[in-house]
Amino acid sequence: MREELTSVTQVKERNVYLVKNALMSIPAGTRQMISRTTGLSITTCNSILNELCETNEVFLLGGDIVSSVGRPANTYAFNKDYQHICCVYLWWNFKTEGAFLHYAILDLVGNISEEDDIALTNITFDAIENLLLKLIAHHPRVNVISFGIEGYYKDSLNNVGRFQTLNGYDIINKLNQSTNCSIILENDMNAIAYGLYQSETYKITNHTSFLVISLFKEKGIGAGIILDGKILEGAQNFAGEVAYLPYPDGDIRTLVHPDTDSVINCAAYILQCLSAIINPSICVFTGELITPELIDPILELSKQKIPSENLPEVYYHKHYNKYYLNGLFKIAQNKILGADY
Image (tube, rainbow, N blue to C red; front, side, top):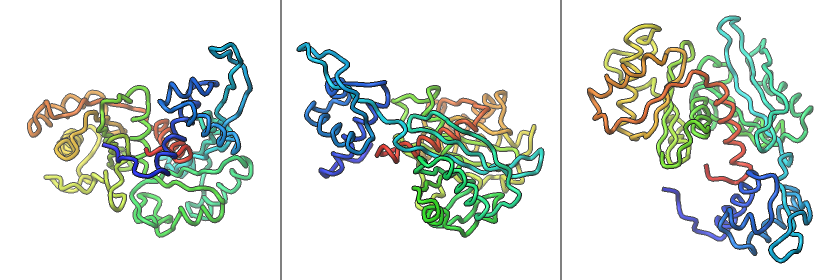
């Protein structure tokens, strides 16, 4: 359950978010329309709209819609170009044995103006910083960088999988100082899980617990957990690091091989553990080691430990990269809009 709003400031922030969110979903709207959508009074909506017009976050379009008394009512539109978002993440191409920085520049409603992969000859913080500085120079409206990484972190990066040269860097503060942008750093599995959670395929309002389990061929094993619409980070951003579970047969990083029963056994073990701990209503499996044919055997094996009625609905999703990008975008969008995601 979400925390109650306990202060005037919190109430105001929530109301501003509701107005922005309402305008984002329509080309334009009047105070009356926004009031009906948000449940806020017309007076409150009018006050917030005036403030948002002053900051250019909302445009006043004029009186295009005739009101109930016959007078044209002022219409407002959300300014999707008030800020832009740069979403980036590192990935490794195992065919070419090379690292790439994938980036996308998006407006506030998710339209992509530019997207590409940049090859990295040196996987260093300085190289990544220089690339980002060039991107921002070409896209001056970028004010937020949403950066996806492997592994877990706290204050500085503690473990970033294959990109060990980035360990020990306080990426958030360093990039904030050099780019003058707000920096968001998020674990790859959390971003993928949040992107899937926000997608039309899986976004079901009465499902309050959402789980994504990934078994990647080369990248490793991980999970992303969404509880009550929020990413479960943990005290040290360690939540979802299921590679560290005490698997009965040993270390999962040496156990799992393609086309073996070990994939089914390990995937079922993860599902059993997390079903008993967080009781998810939906679980999505992804990653190169998982195929659609393995879902039923994973479920059947899980039922030997967990009653079937306590297991989640289980799905398989092959293509996760677009949800990685979407998750990074939605996290940044929520921060800009003031949503408590």
